[in-house]
Length: 112
Length: 112
Image (cartoon, rainbow over all chains, first blue to last red; front, top):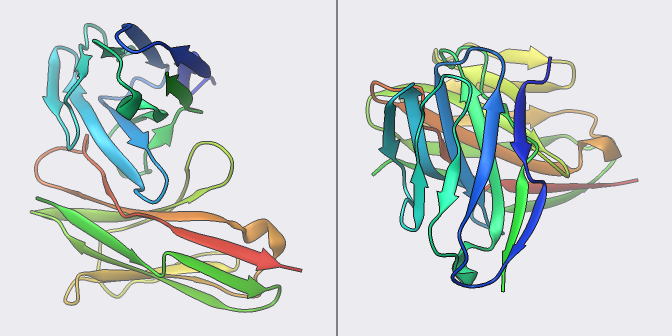
């Protein structure tokens, strides 16, 4: 079982560049979400999805875009990278929340 | 806006000590409270609490929810160096399981 797979694991971007962080799960989970983790701030929700074709904003959505065309995939797009987006990004999924949320291993992004 | 606050933010103990980590929440239409342990990578699921006053246990770890006080505690007895980690609590609420609101985390350091 692969669980939740995130790619890439590390990325360095220049200010203004765009990129897509990939997230895929093979558990047929309905709910998927993206978080960023910064020192001393826990994890903050960027965007989430309650099923294919349905997405919504979280606490810190600005500068990020998402889509959910299939149940398995939930990519996160950085439209024009800024140094403030330097962070560790986690993708997570769950079916009903009863057994907790499964997290990917994270993407460490540095914007210079 | 939903809010989860953890205390203390950091804690240093010696092996064998017992620790209590606190989590308070303000989550609209509260559903559940979750505890996670995060070492170097992704958070790993510890407990999910939905009912007040019912303790959940796993080895030396236990947790309980108090819906009247809008809080939860995580206890770790006979701590070991392997318990050193960030402990995160998160709340879910509303109509969607897609959203987790995290606290800032408690950094626990256990010295030999």
